[in-house]
Length: 212
Image (cartoon, rainbow, N blue to C red; front, top):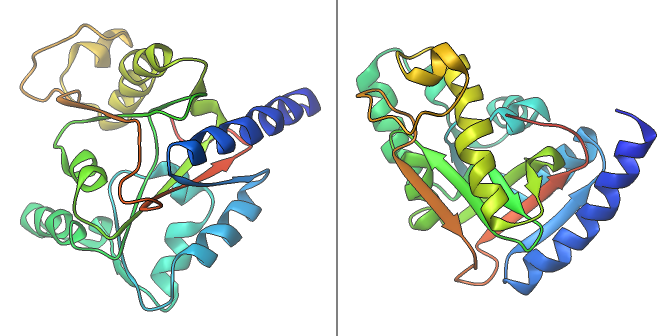
């Protein structure tokens, strides 16, 4: 990443932290993945039950590895051997002390957009786990809510589809077709514009490119 990108992310990150706090989220800006990992472990108490959905960003800062080897009760679906076990792990995560997620889009005004196939991730953000911890690279940040929605639909979802490889139009074209495929991964779109109770949702913004 160039020095220009670093300065750009740092300046926008400081503004976004203030705007998130106005909406009663807790928010922190970390310039590097290493700083983000340290902050995340400060926010997750030892002994806590921690679940997550698809969290490439948390993997990239080393948080998932740290939780699996540390003094935490990690609900890791990747360690499940059957589809039934994975489904149960997703349900168990709804009762976690801390649920990890990222953002598919995040406006500079402090509004988060997430798009889901099964719905377990957006359901947890809305209601369930005691605390939500969002790890988001500054590449997820857009100027407006409309831009954040567009990013979720036309950037994050097609990129994730390349990862999943399901038989959907964007697998072949890389472009959103507003599909109604049986295996569509864009079934729920959640806009989180305010935090209630105050501080339940915490953001760690990272001045690097993370996730999709």
